[in-house]
Length: 328
Image (cartoon, rainbow, N blue to C red; front, side, top):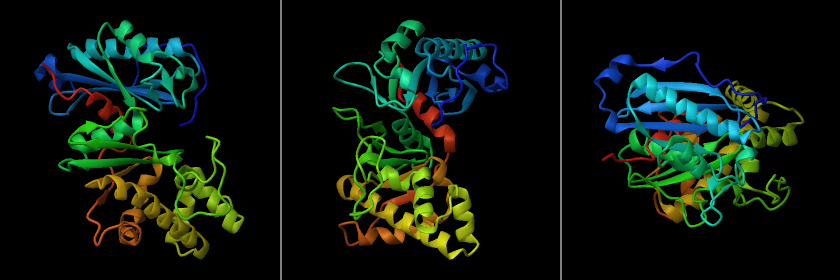
């Protein structure tokens, strides 16, 4: 995620509001779910009815570097959502990090102003209700498992391939967090099979999966091999046009993705893997990676489905709403 410029937030009234009035009139407010996705440059809010239909959706700038303004912005977004829909709803929030089960504050967040802050308690106080917070990759996986590309699969590994690499795990519709709140964080495992020339990672280690499979990692690998600096879309386009160097870069990327996914499949044996993030739009991955998996997975066959996301960059905010699976 990229950090936007700081500003004193003029929270509302919003512009470019997306609101389905017909749905709102028909909707029973006791079942409305509100999802909030806190990104580095924008905060997105969505209201879903019991069937997952969108009642309201809005994106507004993130008050960069200002924790208290971020809390106030979210509170205003929720209030505005409920004013427009004329309903109240449960609130789920997706963040790039996680709430530490030991300290009770945010850790590992890209939006650094959240780190060390009791976001769940402050939002609960601001909104006057209990809220639920989860990692944004968990929210992505939950959205795709609930009513997206992986609907109907009992176990789902949701992968983020973007500026960074992350993941989330969902079993029977329930996200797995773990006692350390890091379930699915495969991006900082070492890339299997890479012994020399391992890139340094911002986390302080070398050879992390993220350094190979992220967008910057793909570009860095192409630069190291060819001396040419290209963004991922240009590398993919060049490979599709027959450029042999770009094709070799993509072949290396696909093999590394297969190796990295095999480590997850060998441990979790998920029914489906859903790719998300900017690189999930590379269509050749869905053709070329599955045939590579049997070489690395400890099984005579690999039945795990590799799926493109149904909701794209909206999956995270939808999954945040689905953190409340039932309403009384």
